[in-house]
Image (tube, rainbow, N blue to C red):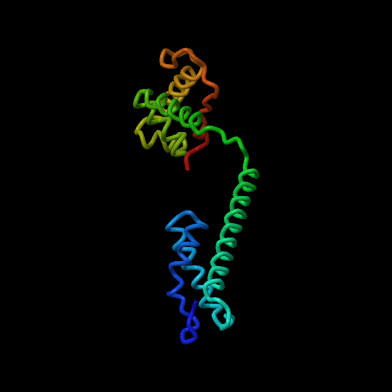
Length: 186
């Protein structure tokens, strides 16, 4: 019990508060957090403490209420997470298929002869016109178009499985080689 001289001797109640908190939480770390939060509330509400009342039971009551509030808060959070999980699409397409396909396209592109690869890169990836790409490579436009046609034919053959490099199995997706312009250069 508390003496009349020190009506708010909280430090004398720490042992009992810690024991009760450990009993509620079953964890030393959580018990310390619980006691801390309960003491904060007790100091904030100390003006409401009645001098004739048992300090221990008042503090235990605050500790218990903080514990119940935390428990309810955790339960509510768990329900919100569960509800959010139910709202999400349960099926997410696997990224492996896309990455495998990109690796196949990259490998086929890199297997092209250097002059075809350079022409195809400048036109399809960099977006240069035929004239710009031919100028960059220092070749006539007709030679560039011939290299592009051979590169596209090789890639189509790999895609269709008619090339030795294609492995004979037809992939699920088809390459679509686009880009370039037959229009005049700028």
